[in-house]
Length: 184
Image 1 (cartoon, rainbow, N blue to C red):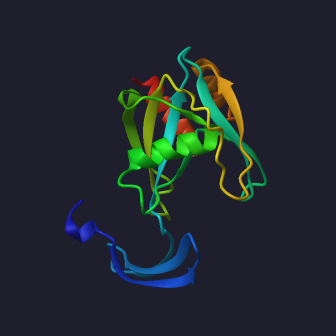
Image 2 (tube, rainbow, N blue to C red; image 1 turned 45 degrees about the horizontal axis):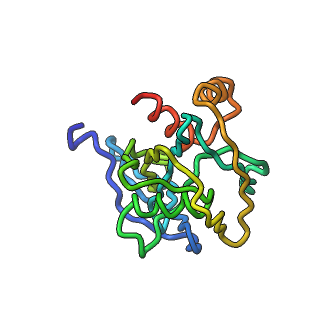
């Protein structure tokens, strides 16, 4: 895209500063010179890690949890934010898998799948997707954050693809993770 066709941010004002999200208003100049105000969400952690955890028999472990924003339970891949003490996204992925599911696997069974931007039109958050093969219970059980209530569910990959096509599996990182895994 040539420079004359670029949108230029002139200013950013924070309308609300939350503990995880900041709501901002950007003042931008459009390619035709018009000035507009655009809403923008800044995610303070900015990034997350999501895991496609595959059991030795090929089935995939998911979590089921209530999501207040949409007022219902969702079936999702285990995931979470990257904490300041995490040196990288893979470390966060391993921690999240253990905390949310009580499962883990050998270091050699981890691989990077893809990076997805959560909502490119209005948010700067992204999530790194990882594959964890041959997972097994660690014996430590789940270590959930305060307020988390997570149930475990196991599905065949083909069942998940059907659920995606039928519209019953709709979480973006989960859909992306399952499709990235199947593309291998």
